[in-house]
Length: 324
Picture 1 (tube, rainbow, N blue to C red):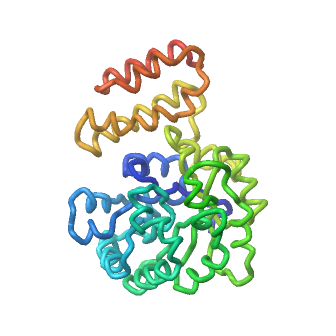
Picture 2: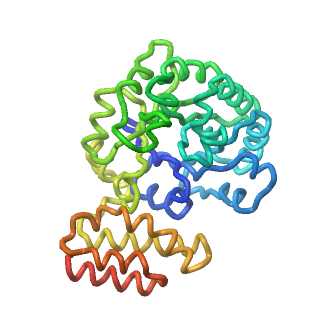
């Protein structure tokens, strides 16, 4: 295993092939698909089966599935295996109401026995390594992750990724890495432990490796509009490498990456306007535009643009006004 593995966390409406390939280029050691609904996959819903499309250039890649029924999750895993990912990941961590509120994702933290039954069913259904991504517990009074991780390991999973928040926290407050470290330092744990939550800088990434001893880290929201964060982290941890693109330094270089993402999104979705709308989350959160003086009007204009020519023209003006 490489010294400091850094993974792109699975995120709905974010980690599609367009974005995954960019993150891979900048050094992500593993990428994950968006969430794949097991029931919809078994029913052969086109928008769901489309999420199984992966490219050799993004390997190693993991396809993540979620659901609340052991049988349908096992069936979905068999379908996923035919797409030939490198890993199948089970989503026990998504906190949003439409997933957790229906008893899937982080909702299963209230039913650990059911979570274990699903895990065993998936592991037994496929030959690929099965991994799990979860949270500390349902709420502050039920942080069950230390015992849960051990039980999940006993089900036969190959790795566990832990987001350092409870479901009740959603994405608020600070991630609690102490409990992630406790899982890693449990002498009965022998599978890799991946830490996730609030890794926004190379310095924080190194601190998480050094202080908590995790085998890998996951970067999630900090990658929005910033796929080069992987190169920044890897350069800080390991030094520059000819095997990945160097992180862009200037505003102009960074905006060129954002423009490429727009083009990739349009190509992936097959519709110019929808591709641009899909990219807006990245514009809205990109560090490229943070802290620019008197930027509000241009920001609104950027987030309302409907064509790539409009978007690119606004970006050109931004570089002219603020670029270095």
